[in-house]
Image (tube, rainbow, N blue to C red; front, side, top):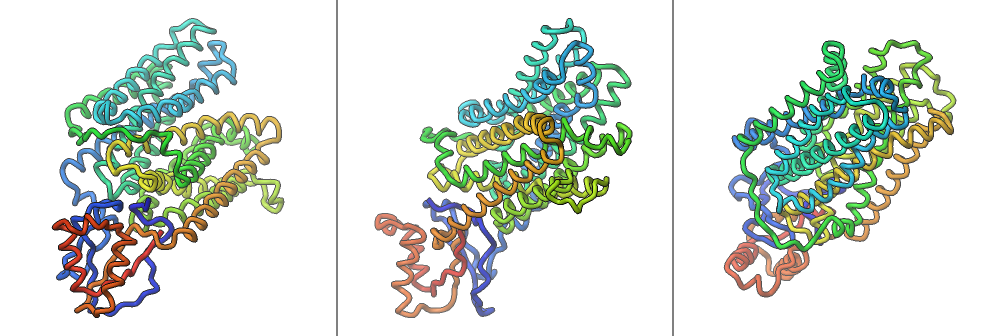
Length: 525
């Protein structure tokens, strides 16, 4: 089935038209392409709405939804990362090995991987607002409870309760993230990538602020204070959400598809590969990087700043990549570019033995971190949109049910990458060293780049006539010879059936086209 958004590139600029020609799009026509808009012939065209996204022009409800989502993402990002500076030392005091401590961190992502598709599959039955608010409450409560673990006996009891708290907290965050992505897909259907980029910025700022805030609060009040403060803020955000978040339109649909049906789309598979590669790369450095830079004799505070570079740039650049994705439709080039640049970045972070001319100097490592952070957003932001396109492509309806399924799969795929990254880092660094380990990550990015590039090229070659945006050029009276061309375009590109031609709307459409000269000016994959 034809997708609803352009994928490979912007409009074809090869056709040249006179200044007297006027663009318009067909409206009030619902078919396999969804709804296509019509432009007032007096205005001479319509700018793509994705290019006009401005916060000041949003409705009051959309402003409220966007602000609350950003606030929630910020605090949950803080809650996820605040324990990094001090928990390993506290766990060691309780007799927990480094390996088990790593598993306590990793199990969080593993639970999200397992639960996100389930939440996404039943989103419309549970209700997006209920799932959103309840997820925040569960996450905030578990964060507060985690702050009491210093009172637990050492050994097995401490380990078991740590795992229980982290698993339940991960369930809450999974519910929150899945419903949040579905809500933005439903509330901002023409700006999904832009809004997603904004939320990723909020999350990135939270991930950056979390360790610093956690360290300050830990110094001020011990193990429990960071969790009590952040957990309380998360709960307060949930209370605000409960009263102010508007009810999301929830139209029940007969369930014909599931997350497993979504995997029938090749585009979903290749988008998932890019997301998973991003998840592996962004956390690969967490358990290994500090030892890698030990010979520079840097203070702990300075080393901590290195961990801010990649997520910080990711947060800052995500809105840019989202805007480019929405306004140009260049999702495939962005995904390919992102894997290329992130792969090169990891070559510099090593630096890789494959590049012996690169010295082991701090500025080379910083340059690599900058490249990874700046282009990481291109691995995940356009991929989310490609998942939506792939879902529509195989017959999913354009509704909240579909958004929930796609959101669940997105979170699941990213989480399995983030779960795999630290374990892969530990094994590779122990067996072959850090420099070869980052080279392996580069190989993963380059392999995904080649696979995605091959798929998108083959897709375009095999389906050159499939178009998501069919623009029709309005001129003067129709020559007689254009009638057959008109029927061919409408039957092949819009799939208008014989029955649909008989109804009033279609008849009016055909009559309007009969009085114009029809010319397809933009056919994009």
